Length: 333
Ligand code: COA
Image (cartoon, rainbow, N blue to C red; front, top):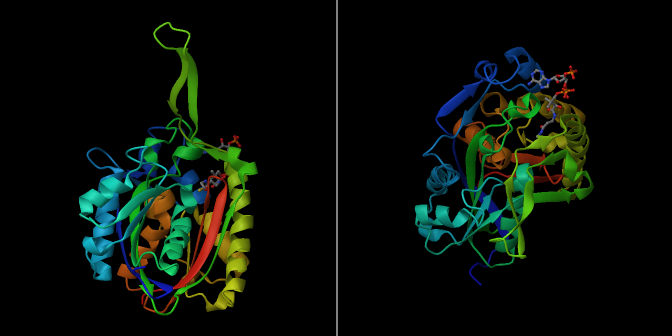
């Protein structure tokens, strides 16, 4: 047992995005779309796209270095690295590469896949390891490069996504700053958002022995169904989390939703009667960066001086799985 506290605190954040920017205007050269359509339906104006030598490892590492500096600890202090991603550099896992880049010699490192809910699921996972006394300092990263997996001929989905990484340091703390959480999965709706593996069976060296080999195919999405799911389930899961935390919606200082679409963000805030000035949004600049979107928005708001120590923050992620969840925490130690 390394730690005698059974609370957690989120003590630092960081983020990183690729250098290349793809505007709505640029997209009109790729698919039949317009800035006006994308802006009115989604609120997105541009997104960042990772080009070699940028990689999931490099973005995740850069975000992590900032988070460690903000928390005032070093890589050698980390016990556990959780990398929430659906777009690893290596299907065997990318967290160990990040561990190596950081020089986090003591840390156990592994990937966690829960699509756009990955950061919320990762936060709750990290909290369990700390609350049971197993680990003291956890580095949680949300990072994705969906531009690798978008179908660039599908105008209904390719305009939505962008690349990026965000990270937080979560530490053992005397009082528990994680006030409540709820996680949900519904595989009956899995077909609405996929990045599927498809293989064909072949014989090996003309022998009778067969294997199936193939590859992952680009994202397929039923936008209307995902939209419907999000505007119904996200307010519900935040309401439930408020209830378990013994809080009311008006107690929330900042609402940070997964940055998928400004219309979804507005609809959820309206349902919860949370005023716009408490809603953090940067979807216009980055599009949907999947597991990165919440920590990226969180980190920007912290660096802009909006989020202050002790502020109550509600986050909610939702996406493929289908999966969704919410967490409410007090910022800082
Ligand atoms: N540019 C121009 N027209 C487009 C377009 C684009 N990029 N994409 C789709 N269209 C067209 C469609 O072909 C359709 O044309 P039609 O009526 O002639 O058939 C029309 O616009 C309306 O399409 P529809 O899919 O009904 O639009 P929508 O209002 O539902 O908006 C989304 C589409 C994708 C923006 C919206 O459904 C959405 O945001 N869903 C959630 C997706 C999401 O967030 N996924 C990730 C979750 S983690």
